[in-house]
Amino acid sequence: MRITEISGGLPDRRIPDRPPGPAVPRLVLGERLRRLREAQYISRQEAGEAIRASEAAIAQLERGRRGFRERDVTDLLTIYGITDETEYATLQTLAAQTNAPGWWHAYQDIVPDWFRTYLGLEQAACVIRSYEVQFVPGLLQTPEYARAVVGLGRTAGPGAQIRRRVELRMLRQRILHCSQPPHLWAVIDEAALRRPVGGTATMRGQLEHLIAACELPHVTIHVMPFAAGGHAAAGGPVTLLRLPERELPDVIYLEQLIGAAYPAEREEVEYYRHVIDRLVTDAAPARETRAILLGMLDEL
Image (cartoon, rainbow, N blue to C red):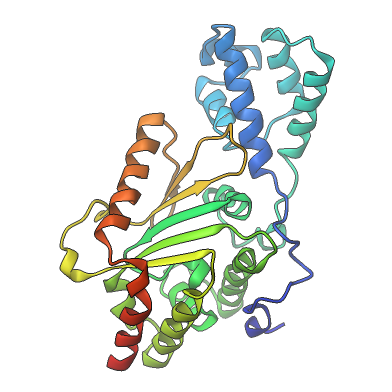
């Protein structure tokens, strides 16, 4: 199958409409176990000792960064004093779901561990807010642009791997064309739009694609112009994911060259939420984006 065959808005039989995965069950179960632990005034260290795990491992479980062994959940529920059969069964069901394969399972050979959590959260999010300084956001890239970006990395691999990485990126974009898409709110630095990634023809196609995306009611694009000078997120890209489950906090994703960070402390999440709010304020208004992009097209 060619990449162009999966880059439009028609459904693809290999990826369901907002496919389920382990990311959200992990977050829900982790948050519930955290609250149960704190209600009993049990430390993470004590909880870890109960399941023969480290304090750091408990933190990872509670933040939804890894799957749960059902035996460990059973032990934790015991020390947390859970006797209600319905709640017990619900949490055990969630534990089983935390180890289910993600929708991207067929691409696991090219998906690093640190990116797997993000893929699941991206598919489940109701709001995705991001700032990109160097490239157009992955959810808004054309196949040609994506191929040029993927090919820049030292670990891009042979041509077959590059093709599969681009294919995976295009499959991620299905969420923008499903029946209940998330609201994508992207701030793109002017530098990313003027950098001729892939050459003039590729950038022309990419700019035209962004102009078309501006017409989608659930997509809001801002351009951070050079004239804005320094701004709150000058250090690198930032993504905030909001999930439909109200009890779950927003997730911050900071992608780096060969890894990613997921700041989880409440103060950190609030800091990055404030950064993204500032970026929207400092960027050109969304109503001007189409005209800005058309002007860049004329200059190519």
